[in-house]
Figure (spheres, rainbow, N blue to C red):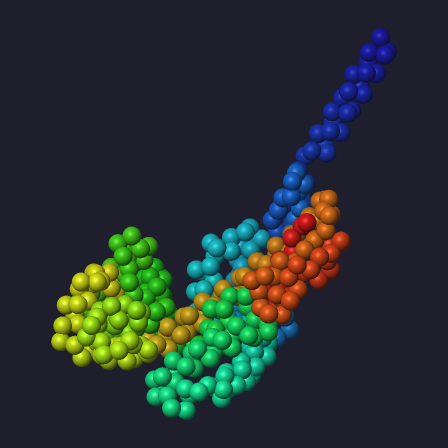
Length: 389
């Protein structure tokens, strides 16, 4: 009989111990934690990858202090930093893109690492462009407008040659050549639409192109937005758009087709093509046979706002936002790979940098037997990545 009661007592004790182990620890659950974290999964093992942020002594925030390339941002507050970090950790880089674009424009966010790259790149790119200009056989005899066209060619070629730059050529070009004279030029417009943010976000679609004519077919995702902006008086449509502006947005091949046999010779410069077609008495009728005027939209002038400078400011802010998010996202991927690499049986590791800048492309295909210590991104906007063999 005593054996029966001994078994019962042991069973009760084991049950109570098990229940105690599985009950939640309320003291831990209620403790605050400024660094927001999420769980990433590799196979069946759960791993936590933190981004976090730290205030700097000069009023900024270092985002991702443990990432391969932390970024130091100025102009945002602690709530902004926490929202950015939380979204990155949850893999919501795409979802916050519009919010972050708006934040960069609204608060004129600055990035120290981007400023450091620009301090290196601008004098280097100027030297490369000057070399191409001096070597050009066309430059000395070119008209002012042709020199503008030639200069754009030299700049594009120089960006390609720049040893260290963001992987996206468009990003590097905008950051190097299209910085607005006044980054606060859009502040007045932002204030005007503070109570109607949806209208302002819609207007950004048009502002990004400045005064250029935009083509939006019926199936285009921007079509409804452009039509709403037209109804509200912010855009012109179709026949309201000046003929010269429509022509300026066309390719030379298209303008050559419109000119047909009336063209004295093949167009070699866009300015030449536009001037010739403007002089024809029936240009609008010719255009009606090749394009749908209903698909054409153009931003109207906004009183008190320089649209060209505004377009520059918006395009520049968008690229600043883009390069920050891409750099942080790439660093987070490298960190997650590092944390989970010990769980994988790999033959080795390889660097993929085929689509990067010339300096990083030199290292494309480099391999390691063990997981490398230095991880991408190696610089602002770097597109290199580590892959398992």
